[in-house]
Image 1 (cartoon, one colour):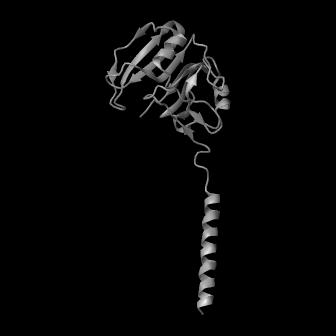
Image 2 (cartoon, one colour):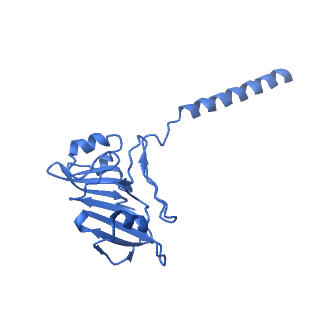
Image 3 (cartoon, helix red, strand yellow):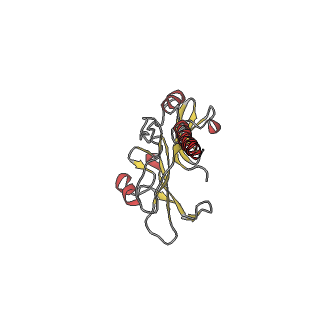
Length: 192
């Protein structure tokens, strides 16, 4: 009887292990269809926001979220003007807009209180900026072109006939349209 119970115990153990294994194999990949927003402003390392299909959600042209102020100036020169720095309650960081009016670029720069170095927190482009996203979309791209380029990454709850949100409002790209053409592109977190 002891031998029978030992074999029965081993059989149930093996069956239990195999049952858990097949359940693990059936679990969906939770990262497969989700956008991941990552910026590292504390170390001034530019990182890219990417989605499962390789869509780059963290930059336009050579500008990337998390890029240092030094690199931004190297790429664009000094801004035409800067807003007064103010603390945002949502993230506790100091934020300042750098306006490049003649280039159609606004950079929202952030840093910790008391720190000099800033990094790009968000990017907004309008005409005459000719920078493109990594999926080759820019000012003047049609609504249909943007929908096709990012079809697997559209946040439908924040998309309508005048706006396409790629990724999410918490980190991604928001295209604003007028007469079926992109007139403004925002890259970053529009909500906290």
